[in-house]
Image (cartoon, rainbow, N blue to C red; front, side):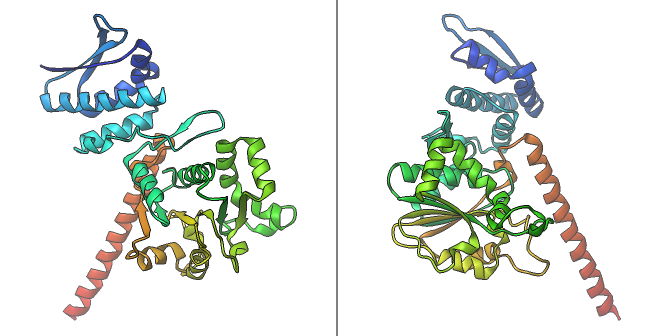
Length: 343
């Protein structure tokens, strides 16, 4: 029987690691086939978490995952099942070393004083690219923090006076509903499309500061069509839901960039609401702009999802479904080709 010990700093930290009804520890135990028990740590305020099992390699990896989770708990004060799933998956795949530095510098604080930090390796790399590149294309599934982190970096740039305003925009493309059925004038009709951007800034700045900056023009939120003909200087510009832009709209947006400005383009190319047969401007831009030094393309995966752990499983299920559909389609083409050659 192999055994490893991980020491916590306090009983409260031990409780966070175990989670409600030991839910966090159960995930780790099931993943590595080990048992984790807490014992009093002599001469310290915390506990000795004993990881034991028949396979020494599995015990070592489980202890490694527990150590990273302890660091997360020490910085954030809490853990979610998604955090545990992520760390366990990284360590199980032999990528535990990549977790170093995730609990690094805070981007900014929310209105309630909560620090905003990278929660995954993918998020950390995304933040680094936004910090060093003029234009960043952040592409990936829902729930990976593409828009939220971009807004956090925009607020950081505004607070440090790197830019003088924040401009947030997204295409007003209908996703099954018709704009004409919504009540009110044009602004009322497009507000639902811009709501995620409002919500993110509201959380960062608080209602009063948000409204004040909105009225002063320091923050501007508008549909993409309003960007045509403008030159945006000294601004942090975010284009959200970019998979719903046409190639012409994407080119129009990128050429609005003025001196002292930077831009982040976010989107999920698997959730395009454009009419069938119309190419996404985001997909085209990923190919056209890939060789330019000042532009970075960052791709998130399902592992970077920071919403409910079920969201990651849903994304993985759809990805598997899409792969199988493509494989069947290719097999069908191959069979038809073989049949034609035989004739």
